Length: 164
Image (cartoon, rainbow, N blue to C red):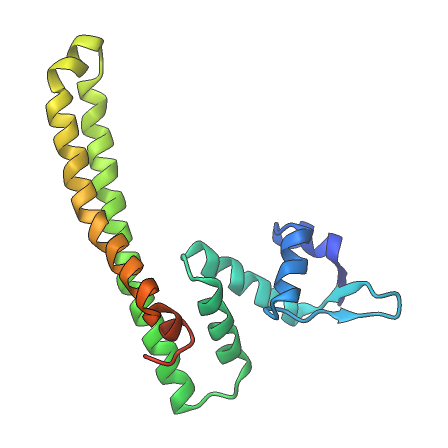
């Protein structure tokens, strides 16, 4: 079955502009009829679903491209090794983010009890700032590490599977 860009957008929840962008970036390659319109088939829909899940999991565009290339290849030991390295790194990053989000939720739950009134907030302002500072210290190293990887070019090489 084939779907137009409008039907595909409705089916996937992705905007037509996003679908065009993914086509331009080579993430999907819908067929074009003589009228020049894009037509998406079942394989394209599956790829778009994979892309949406990877975006939700905070994969970069380069990581998504790499994974989509792996999906298109015949299974091999090298392909499996690259996929395993990328996914292992992503799992570690997601687990770190989950821990940070859990800390933030705990902070917010505790904050709810501290801001019942203006007086309660004033009395707990130092404690609130301490919680925020603690969470910042937890998340700042991850951001700093990513900035350092970006500055050194290592992140680009990792995303291109050159340093995995």
